[in-house]
Amino acid sequence: MIIRKRLAAAACGLLAVLASGLLPSAAAADEPAAKPSPKVELVLDVSGSMRARDIDGQTRMAAAKQAFNEVLDAVPDEVQLGIRTLGANYAGDDRKVGCKDTRQLYPVGPLDRTEAKTAVATLAPTGWTPIGPALLGAADDLEGGEATRRIVLITDGEDTCAPLDPCEVARDIAAKGIHLVVDTLGLVPDAKTRDQLRCIAEATGGTYTSVQHTDELSDRVSQLVDRAADPVVTPVATEGARECAKAPVLKAGLYTDREKFGEHRWYRVDVLPGQELRASVSVAADRAVNNDYGVMLRAVTVRGREIVRGSEAGDGRTDVISTGLRYPKAPAEDADDDAKPAPETVCLQVSNSYSAPPQVKTDPGLPIELTVDVVDAPEEASDVASFGLGRGWWLLGVLALTGLLAGLLWGWVSRWRISVWRTN
Image (cartoon, rainbow, N blue to C red; front, top):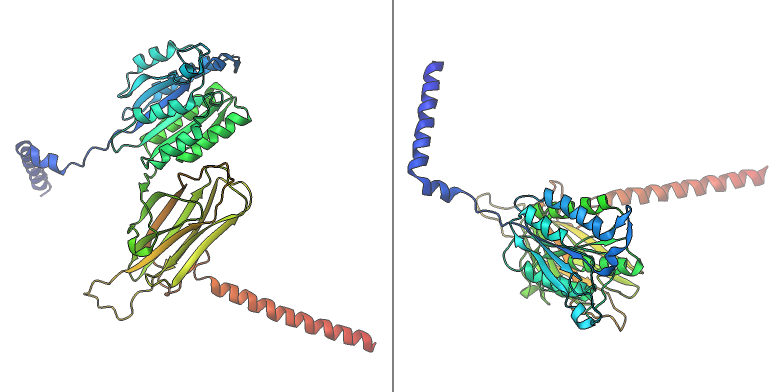
């Protein structure tokens, strides 16, 4: 019996092999589409200040070259990588010429490690620090396609080519909605450099890192390249409307948008009976803002009745402020098992009360990140909206009642003790 089963299995295997050889087109049709290769461009400052010898006993340029060699050895095969320089070629005093000194050292594409290392080895600290033009050039280098894109900027000083503010350049890049992230690394940065690089990163949803040692530089750049190769979530660009009726309908996912100072934006989500809507929003203050601000996320019906809201306020400088809400839609008691339940359209309103000093540009608007999730509601959930505590409001009632009874009891005991004391 066992032998017969093995013979049958072998025959089935042979037929499968023959079928796959005779029908290659059908097999290929079932294969999933190839995932687009992520793109990363390393932007390296090669200005004259990179001659400073303050990183592990060597110059900043030598530390950067060593880190680059280690990073290039570890780049995942699926990553298309390029290298751009700034301040590498012009050593003169003509500011107009110096502020155009940025070029692509190695084109974005499949990596030839030997060729890339050879190109980096030829670099020598030379000129100016045109960070803004370098970011614009890098954005052009990474243009096109649906793959994730990342710029990693390594510099030791602030931009020397004002009035082209690199922070404004980063905001303009973010406003295009192309999901291009800029991460910044400051080599032994001072306060001004730190503030500028942090602003660039925050404007595009990237990160800022201060670097004091060579191993820190190589480790951090490697992490960022790996992150591009395996992103956690790719946000979807959307555009909220001024009223619910014209708002985009969102499914579960992560969305990005831009909202003007003091603006209200609307989005719609369909929620079936027995499901729970969970939503949260984060607004990034990517520029100087006035004190006293807030963010509100409201869920309302299409007729304007408020279901639930979440809000958060701040006072003073902030980078990100967030709030969220939950709305469980109770299952219909008389629902027909064979009939498809009708969803309820929930309108989500995102509002902010930010304002800015007169000298601060308010365009483009503030970057917002909206997370929407629709899950099966807890079995005990009723058609009551909640935020944070869920159906735990009964606990607050119990605590309040307990406190009231304890207060009455303590007052009665105190009065009894006083009356006894007076009697004695």
